[in-house]
Image (tube, rainbow, N blue to C red):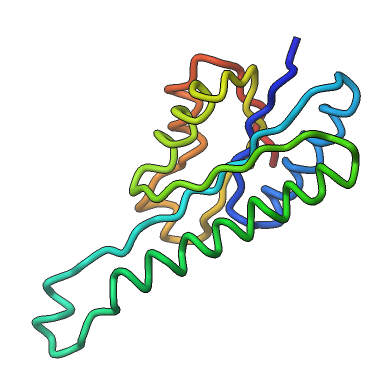
Length: 147
């Protein structure tokens, strides 16, 4: 039934919970994982520059964000391989994580998405909105949400 599982990760303990569950599930069905981490690119703000504060180097920021994202998927892949589960990794740079999650699921021919209920905390979660909710609304395949 579900042989290819997409597991988006942001490196949080809750997404680690989804990774662990996906690995255990994949072991029981002889399935495989695709892990994805979406790095959000640098946001340039003219307001910051106008205030006399120099903005961070956008290239360096994006490179660091991608490095962290790669570390997150490599960690998940190592856990999967240690349990004998095949795991492919993907990193994307996007302002729209949910679109990358849905796109990767389709492009990788995944049967199901295992993901955390949230990654952000506090006010940022309210302003940005729930990526999980957006995946649920736009995915054409089942989504298993971990709390």
